[in-house]
Image 1 (tube, rainbow, N blue to C red):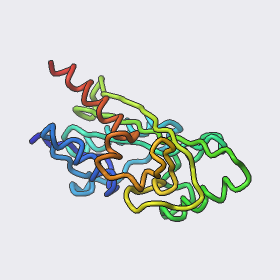
Image 2 (image 1 turned 90 degrees about the vertical axis):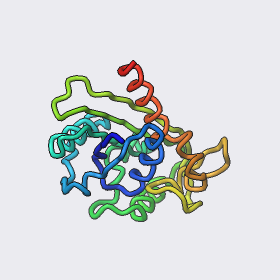
Image 3 (image 1 turned 60 degrees about the vertical axis):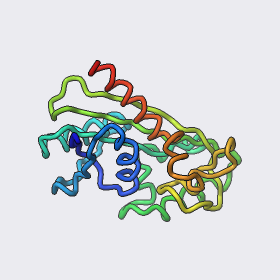
Image 4 (image 1 turned 180 degrees about the vertical axis):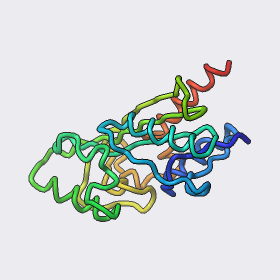
Length: 197
């Protein structure tokens, strides 16, 4: 098993990455388990924040690091909350408060189009001049009432018309097959394979 530091302490992300990377023989270790503090995320793009987090985790651990920066972009809100998705309602970060603010922000519009974004960055070391970078999106609609108990973040309000379910109503394997994070990881794995062939 190759050790890989996940530059996150988010339990939901850890579960998803462990499940998706297990077949490739990666042991995914959350940075908190190694005593690594969270990194500042001062940038306006998902890619820049993910790169900063990956380099920080790799520098602190001496191991390859994988970082994800993801969030939800809502068309009627000029693609907000975007990179501020986890703290949309302020500190401390709280999914319920974030979702409540999102639904309230959309009360006066019929435009419910939204998409999740995932930027994934993998570095072999903190100074890696060729980080692997992937960014993907997952389209859906925001609904007013929470539906489902799987997933995390905005999943109970992120409705997928083609399934007539929210992301939180999908089974974990089904979600991993189609989500922004699942798409990004598959692309990243494909890039990894081309580098090692």
